[in-house]
Length: 513
Ligand SMILES: [Cu+2]
Image 1 (cartoon, protein in one colour):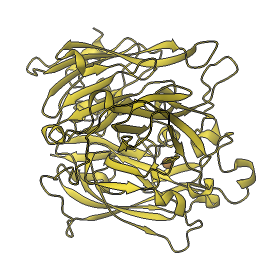
Image 2 (cartoon, rainbow, N blue to C red):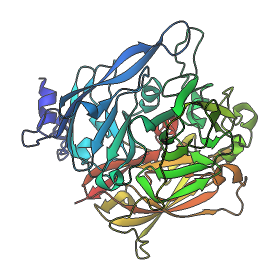
Image 3 (cartoon, rainbow, N blue to C red):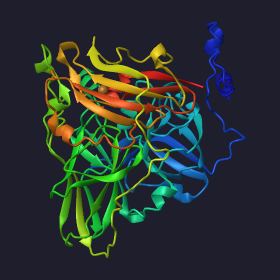
C-alpha cells in the first residue's frame, strides 16, 4: 500500500497538513471496516470491454461486472447481451458492502443514485480512485422499495464514463411492496433508455465539444438496455416495467402507440400512493418511472410500441441572440430533442391466464408526508452566464460550500428552483438531482414572460411521489420540500444533464450533525 493510501485510509489528507490548513477528516474507505458485518458483500469492477451492439464490428465499451462474495447469488442479475452493469437487488434493512475496483485507465468513483447513504458511501468526486485502486462502500439500505441506479461520478468525467457504458440498476424491495403482489420475476422488466452515436466502425462517438457541453449530448440511435432495435416477446398478462432515462441529456415523452394510457405506479423514490394514468410520461435524464402494462386483453400476434412522442425542441432548449443560428436547438444532433422515436416493440406472442388487478392503494407513506409551512425557503436560480450554466449563481469547486449551502442533517427546507433566462437568452430544461434525499414537489409555477408555453412536455410530467430528480422547464419555478439525509457530511446537488454536471453546474451541500 502506498503512503498516500495509508494516509487516506486513516482519514487524513496529506494536503491539509502540507498547506497548514486544519486536516480534513476524509471519510474515505479503502479497506473494509472489521466491525461492519454485511448481509451482502459484492465486488464491482469497472473495466474496458466490448459488446456486439450493431451488425459487424464489436463496439468497445467500459462496463461494470460484479461478483457476490457473501449473500444470495440472486443479488446480481445480468441483463443478457447488454453493456449495462449487473442489476443489484437488495432489500430494505440489508447491510451492504460493495468493493469497487477501478480497472479503467482513469480515475473513477461510483454514486448510488437515489440512495440515502453515509457521506463516505455517496461517491463524491473527491473520493475518486485511480487505476488499479479500490474503494469500499458500506451502508445499510434505508430507502423504500424502488428503482434506483448506479453510475460513475468523477469530476469532469461523469458524462464520458456513463456514455461509454458505465451504469447499472439497483432495485430495492421491502415488505410493504411485497404484500402488493405486483408482477414479478419474468414479468418485472427493466428498460434503460439511452441514445448513442456510432462512427463508421461501430465505435461510440462522444464529441464533448463546446456545443455538446452547452446543450447536452444527443445521440442519433436509441438503445434500450444496450440493444439497438429493442424487441420483447411477452404473454397476455400484466407487466411491471421499470424505466430509467439513462441518457446524457435527452428528454423522453413516453407513450404507447396504440393509445393505451401510461399507468404510472412509481417514480424515483418508489411507489406512488395511488396509480396515475397519463397520456404521456415525461422522463428527464436520471429519472425513473415504473409503469404497469396490462396485456391480458390483447390478442396473441398483436404488437405494442413504446415511443417518445414528438414535441418542439424549444420546450426544453431555448437559444436566442447572435449565436442562435449557429447553435441551433439540438446541439447539432441529427435527432434533436423532441424527435418522434421508436424505443421498444412489444410482441404479444403467447397466451397466459392473468388475474392481476392493480391495487387502488399502492403505498402508505410512513411517517405520513405533510407540507411544512414553517420550513425555511431557499431560492436557487438556474441560469447561463459567461459561458457557464450556474446553480444559485455559482459553479462547482471541489470543497467549496457557501453559507446558504450548510443545513442541519435531517432538517426540512423549501427549495425554489427558478429557471431564468440567461446570457443571449439561453435557457434549457435542467433535471436537478439532489444527493442523499428523496424530496416532494410542492408546486410548479410559470414566469408570465416565459418564452415558450412548453405545454407538451409539461403534460407528461409526474410531480407526485418521492423524487430525487426534478425537471425544471425554462421559465418554471418549482417548489420542493427537501427532507435532508440524517447522515452528516458533504453531499451534492447538480444538473443531471451529464455535460452540464461536468461543466460544473453542481454544488456541495454540507449537512451538519
Ligand atoms: Cu442542466
